[in-house]
Length: 495
Image (cartoon, rainbow, N blue to C red; front, side, top):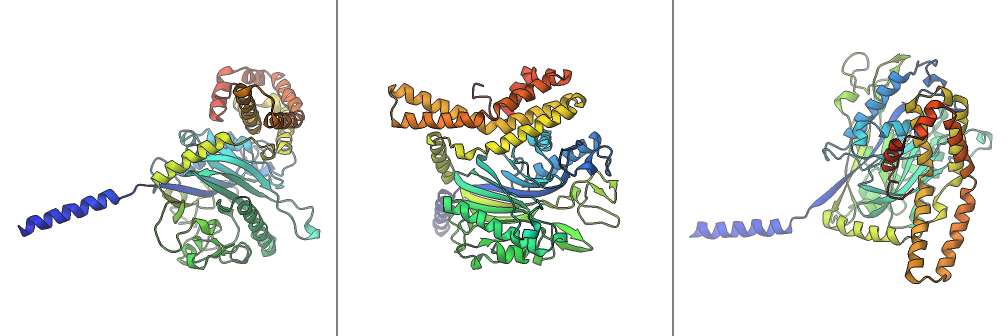
């Protein structure tokens, strides 16, 4: 009898706990310095000759193709230790040359299978390396992309241009998030310039929070400094311990990782941890309540896959890079990738995502979100390259340039579609030209005026393309165009 009562009590306990059990969604956010992901062609105004067929690295199509394959393998594996088959929702990148390389990267089977897309704005770096942002559109909804330029604080350096801060906003797990992707000045430049980077990024972070205090902001990148260095610990205010994080601070989980003797790059036998992802306090469970009704930091991990590390020789145990001392190693990068993991109640994710969906439907497209100057500059570069080298381009190279053109146009096409839809819906509702309709029409006219500067460049690019036999074939390939529109999420717009 006693055993029977105990059994009933045990079953009741199990039933109560089972009913109280919750399901959680986990999201991986990554960063990777991909070490010189260059295509094989010279970009006008950039010192990229080392990565051309006749340059120091004899960078040909074989090496470029292998580099793309290796990067895609590593990027697709990031986050899979906790999320098999899914990987990272978003990944910040540094040392990417241009949109062409990113287009080719996302076309690799491992990344294409998950539908990864990219955000990128060409920067002023003399060598041509930029920061970029990959995202899985089934997990992350992109809102805005902006490149905040690095500003030299000393008058003597005013002519020196370096990498800016790629700032991306959107929605993850139904919540507003912001990412600032960085590649701060090298150690050869001196600590002051990275400290300046920390000061400037803190301003960018604070500006995002000023626009939306609920936004969860993550600063990620190759900082060329360790967590305890002044640029991170003092200027960015990225704290080592969660309990020490106050308003205006950030949390840096990598500090404790480095304390254990582990890093992301090795120099003269010692490890550094330059590759970091730090976050604002509204992502932390400082009190330890384990209330995951909001997106919350869970843990972090260096993505040290076996194939990324040298197995023997002088550099055994260190990252296997692409080239060393002029020798092509068919490796990956001199840095290891990193990832943080975020957790949220699955029911709250579903609820919040529905709210975001409705919000996005109701939002009026904003002209301010489109950087027409950057689009114009992008088309001017495409046009200059096509005029100079188009007759020598292969079919794949022409397809890469056309992809680049459509990528530049994507925000314009989306906004044009939204304006058209909203005006049509308003007209269908009452047929009256009220104050709201007039405001929309005014915005549409302003949109058209800005677009007028780009349209002739589009037409000229198409004309130059069709002067090449291969370019004409690509431009008139309806199957390729259909596939391209689908890749970019533009296939349902009716263009």
